[in-house]
Image (cartoon, rainbow, N blue to C red; front, side):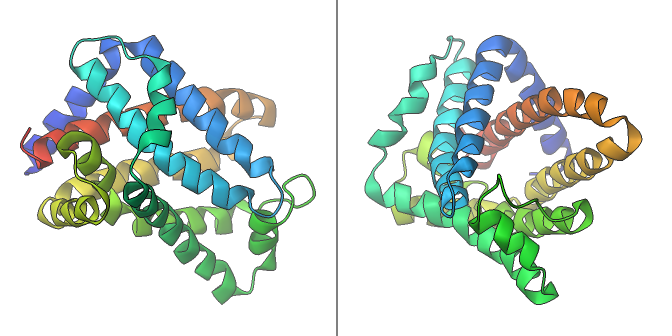
Length: 235
């Protein structure tokens, strides 16, 4: 997969979003709302968030696949996450939690207990780490997650299960690593921009812009992941 293929996939991702924009954006809003609401659960909320989000991410790719076929995706597809094979669930959990714990290692190394308190305490009582350290944490977690980009697509597009999906996803990541660099760059730029948004705009205006920008970005990431995966797996 060369640079031109990646650019074509990026353009195809925009076209895919335009195929059923309101349905795809609604699915993205549901994905974000369900995942983030789990952070409100004290102590274990963040672990629940990553586990549930990993299952819903696979189903989001199914929704984009339906849209790519020219059909209107139904939101109940998200509920089908409960029917994933247990081995696939475990693989998705591991792919989501491993980068998170790698990111936490940064807080441990720097002696920043505020990060650990925020994630494993009560979000109503503990504030998140300052924006600089939070951005570093997110970037470390992002680097840790990138190798697993094609694992869920292997399940959705190829029908692979459990360890076989993990193997095929990692092989695709190794073979098509330039596509992962593109995804990494897009995400890193967005995260850096979102971190600077409150500094560039008044707080209320920044908050008003951040939510729709997040929804649009997450929807595009799913769409881009889908179009890249189609090329990676030769479908």
